[in-house]
Length: 212
Image 1 (cartoon, rainbow, N blue to C red):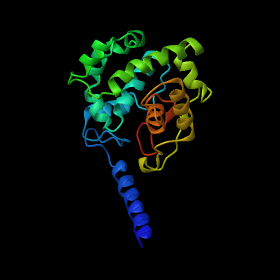
Image 2 (spheres, rainbow, N blue to C red):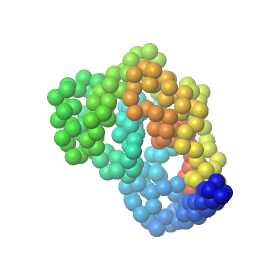
Image 3 (cartoon, helix red, strand yellow):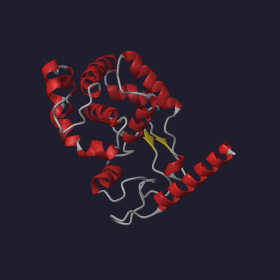
């Protein structure tokens, strides 16, 4: 009985989500994967999410922001994005890799970012691994895009409710980065990262950005 009810609830939730995402955004009547009622969030969806990124600086920025995103809403991170840019020196990977313990402790008192005792110093650790990968592969971008032979993977989802939270690709990338010493790069975080930097284009069929 419980299993049958659970399946029914899941089906009902999918129907509700499919209906919700098919509705035009009240901001400008465009159907979106996400971003309703928030111009900041809608603008991120329209101009960044799913757009291929091959610049290491931007790839590093999104890696740190997606790690900060763990357990929080993405809109929260977007609202604090400028704070992160200030704290992490414009996401200059060399400067972040060389941040002092004093700088990191100071960052933990800064309300402009999420003051998490593992995430904040984790940025320095990830920056150092990022640098080592640049030296090994020529650029982090070369390493990342080699996983898809340089061509973005395009999803073909009937609704956002159908988009997976994790994939074998994300699991493999996560495993490699963890082995190299990065933190806050679990499979779910890495799939969100792949979507964010356009390695995967997961705009659903009804989204106005699907065919872009």
